[in-house]
Length: 251
Image (cartoon, rainbow, N blue to C red; front, side, top):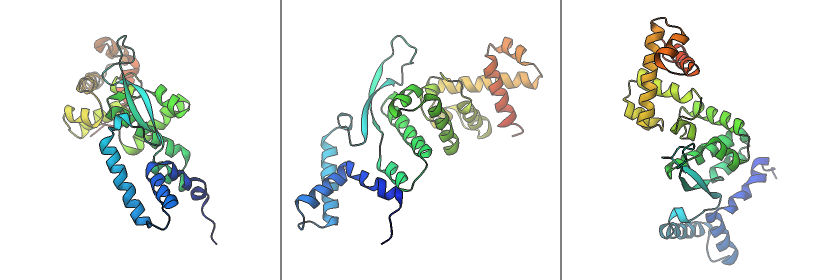
């Protein structure tokens, strides 16, 4: 008899922790001989559908999920009047187990989980900071920041975390994408805002600052002059300089 791959042998039974397999196993155990596998599957689907229709998702924590008090996405973390929003986050999903079965590197799985919970929080009116993710996933914050950046580059997207929505981070990634979409792809700023999970105000500021810096760079002004003329921080000017030289040059 062929030995099962280690990933399937170690992780396959983890599916039993979810609601549908639990119902299927119940009918198989308690009504053995009465229902075949297809009937058990169909009954389980019907019961779950009835349950979900009659139990609001906000009030129901499913297997693999947790409740977290996230920062309200309309409140800044440094505001004395900050508000919070209870959100339901999926820490373990069936697609995660499939990746473990395939012996996918944990680094890749963690990226997927982090991206999912950041998006789930935002869809429910909250935002997760790097510290939130660190606490939830019991991982080093700097490590998670690196993973998030890798995920965004690999998937050509921007996750709606605190640093992006409230512009509280120093990363250049979202500036690159915003400028690229507007300058190179010729997209309107309202479309760019929607595609990058930014506010219209933030996108307008990035674009305006980009053109201010570019105009002075084209006029051969140095960083000290640009800083005095625009009141833009020097490290931000250097970020825009990198964008001009690396991402939109000669386009």
